[in-house]
Image 1 (cartoon, helix red, strand yellow):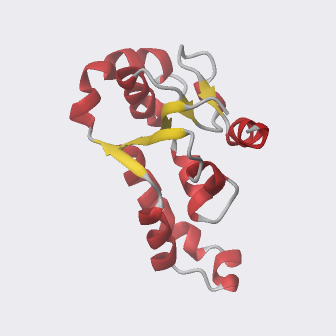
Image 2: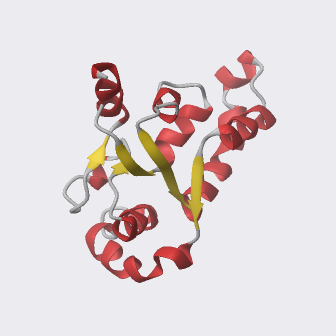
Length: 144
């Protein structure tokens, strides 16, 4: 796999990794220098964790909120506050805001860092920033 200096991570790969999904393999990749996440995106993940822990599958498996929060802390995420990418918010709103306002912070951080986005969300298609899905990253990892 060709080295990637940094990836801006959306909420869905983080949630997948926290639940033990295949996204966790990408987080272990030595060819990716940094996994950047916007603070509002991290807050979105944290807000969703209690709902995940309450799902019947999680309850049945004995997965607790505490376990999911612990898994989140183990991910190699570099958190960026909104003030870091504030200048890019207007452009990000223009590009993606009408489709999904919750994605504005992810795109603004990607614009500021000039980095691709890791997301399975189709809203990031054709926003002027490269996007990798988890499946695409895993294929690249397997190619080596």
